Image (cartoon, rainbow, N blue to C red; front, side):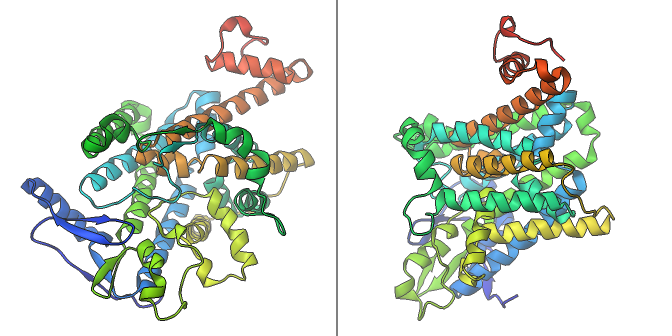
Length: 470
């Protein structure tokens, strides 16, 4: 690991760091001593009080920190069997909500942390990668992409994060799923060779993008309720209300309160997502008497740097962000085709590697590592179709069960919440249809199974039921 030069300043007067596109400016908070104590506590933890003397040291510190967090994430998910697809399956098929509550706990922890960090100026998520709070609500892409992803993760036996964890545990099927996701996700965003067309532009743009809504403000709940003048306060209120509601719901269940692994996974995954936001918002580089964020330094690279050595290939990936996995899995194809150049390393790429390694380490320590291959041709086809749908849907919706379902949700962006709900619906419907076809075999046509499944989920009146409930 390269040496990192940094200084940590614990200030006597509370200070907040507001990152603009150009600089990180300091302003003195003229508020209560409670804010001072809060800021001192956060400062003692963190990166928002760290200033680096070069872009290379700041960027290296960020990548290594994300990698280590990701190793923990992979180990935790493997150890606790945290699985968003499994959470939906348990709830729909067995009425067991413990793993679903663990998912909600992660959302609640991340949302509560984000709300407080943003209110006290310790994170800046105005311009994120991807743009969760953008003023264009891509409702069609959020809903359709979420549905596709939910169907896909059910057919492929897990979401993007679970695919990485299963690879670390020795599952060879997941390597195939990973490869298919990588190709599809890459070409959803990047042009085909010798062309300016992408999968998105060819298949989806013309009919999905017109469904988008242009908003006068950012799309998060606080900004929509409070407008420009009061959005800071309303973001605090909305975040506290949503996070409290989620946490109360989660811990109401006695069986969940007795489920140590589920509590552990929910808390740690929420904190890790929060850590990603905190790290990417807090890199401050001192250059020419000014303080720059990673993204703003990149914009001024020609003025500030002596050469292009160490310059990342893209500046977008330097914006504030946290964990998501479909786009980064796609980035692995670009990384490989680019000769594994250091300039192509991003938050997402090191997160992918870290999760796989963390899962592998836990699998070896717990002696649960085992090789697994497809049971049949049908099993292969299901996984391949699921991977295509995940790669497509995850890019359309700007994220997966982690990327939108926790990271995006923590910003309280409407698009993230819609995607979260659509993923659950797509997964639940797929499981219901599969179950009806398993029980009724040839009698259960797709239409009959789908209508009966929608009735079971209380989305259609019971008069439209085609098959007896199972």
